[in-house]
Length: 174
Image (cartoon, rainbow, N blue to C red; front, side):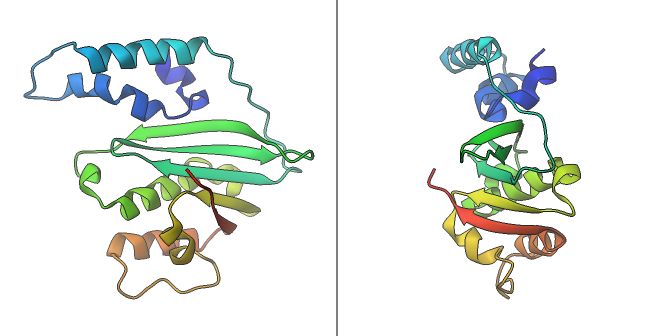
């Protein structure tokens, strides 16, 4: 049930991280306080009423992305005529063991790429606003600036992939 409704729940990968840790090979299975807290949290999220709106191609689209030490997440939302952002969908996933070793800059960039790929069918061919809480990415992924020569290979590849989209990137405190 969590997998099915997960697209409507924000920060799902972060909430479920203690439960996913029980599935790792060569690690003993031990139900402790972090797992109990995650279990109770996901039950509350499933019971809560999340108000989503249907996708409307006539409304401006906003994609907000964020990363934590354990997962990446994104929210696609419409900017309503009265100024409020209303979610169209949520997406998140856990980071692999290798991705958990990434720098915070790389994790935040990965969150953006994950979000753009996840909502490609809504984003490609139209202008949208991309929001991040990581200021360095504003300059790295700005459509008016070249990617820094000394940026990591991942960042350069991701910047190249994002070049196919029409977006304005903005900083959002988070």
